[in-house]
Image (cartoon, rainbow, N blue to C red):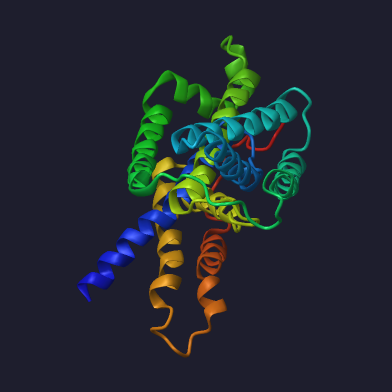
Length: 286
């Protein structure tokens, strides 16, 4: 029993890690006033880019960095669309999700001459534990930045009352653009962890809705880095359970176990609907 509990704990942390990175990105973006529905696509392009660079250079660390850069680039695109052009943030985010999913699928055929999945590439191996620990460190650092520093105060002011920030001589649009770019970088890191930490390849649909679960964690965690991280661990636990319980509960269908993290997210959101308040200017163009 002890070995089973230990395995469940380790697997929970591993499964929670990519969601934590994406959720932290979501917290930062929404605290600045921009809804980042594109987390799923940013994770996907981070995972895909990491594999491509690792395949070309044989250096998984460069792949991780490339995944972060790819996510940051998409975050910048979303930020420009939301701030400079005042495009509907939901539409822009969903567009990013669709383009990334289709682009990665086409890239697999173009680069690896096969649909569905890439060839195996050099991965992080046992060193992926560093990224697991780093996810929790990042949550602590972001919590401190948002609550204890002038920069964090400005980010939060962007999400609550950007006009007041502008009256103090600070450009809210520049703050939002920087926050969404960093949000994309974090989501890209989450995707890169999926492809080079948990696995050593990219496959179509490998993000499997984790970007949307991360958004649920942002709401469940009340737009707080530590709260969102705790929610991600809970969702990671439900995802880990499907692996630990397979073959142990004969009457429970495999499909039902695979649905556990998504059902957990739905029940969590249903349970807190109307009880939480988003930043006042979240999703409102300025």
